[in-house]
Length: 86
Image (cartoon, rainbow, N blue to C red; front, top):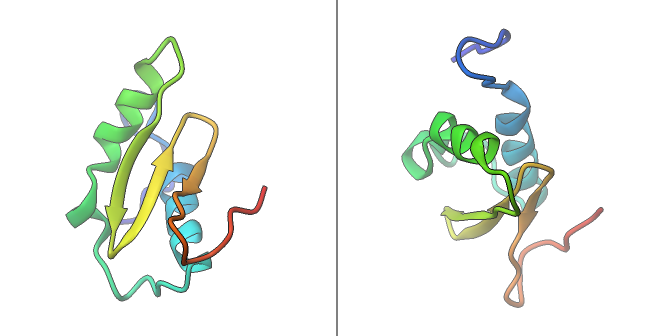
C-alpha cells in the first residue's frame, strides 16, 4: 500500500491523502473503512487527468459524500457532517 513514487500514468499519492484527510475531517477514522471498497483511486486519477474540461466525480464512503475535481476534494453536505473549509 505504500505508493511513495509515481508508477504509471501520473498516479499521485496526493489524491489518496486528500481523500483520507477529508474523511478524517468529517470524523471518520481511517480504520473504519477500506477506500478501495468505495472507489478505484487509480481509475479516478485517470479520469480526472484525462479531462480537458470541468469534471467532478462524486462517490460516497461510509455515508460521507465526496466530490473530487482535479483541484480539490470536497464534502457534499446535506445538513450534517463537517463544513467545507477552503
